[in-house]
Image 1 (cartoon, rainbow, N blue to C red):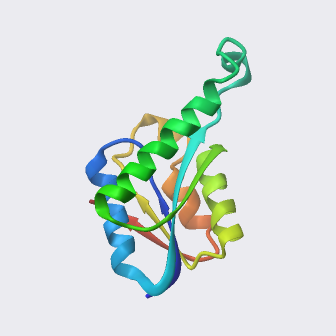
Image 2 (cartoon, rainbow, N blue to C red; image 1 turned 45 degrees about the vertical axis):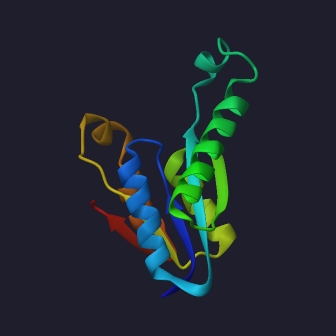
Image 3 (cartoon, rainbow, N blue to C red; image 1 turned 90 degrees about the vertical axis):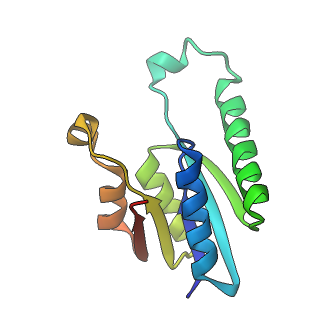
Length: 137
């Protein structure tokens, strides 16, 4: 069992997020803590200039509301963290700051973008200082 689990959740298919959160609930110690993390990938500067100044804030608030809804649906208590930046490094930073002993990430079908930008899961797996569970559900 684990005392602090980081659940890296994308806002894609709801079933995948629910599965990852349920898995964390099964693995957490009785007095442990789940940290539900979603990272908004940084928008390039040249794109951000054409967006309203409140865009990132509203995007972050929307993500937080979706995470709250997920926790309520599954009746799971979790600390919610919505960050902005490069996904894998941000997740790793949060895991270090929270002193996590497990990170749970979902896998996806590799595509051409992984060849150019690298996979978030690969990056986390190779650089994490704690255990990593890759959920292939």
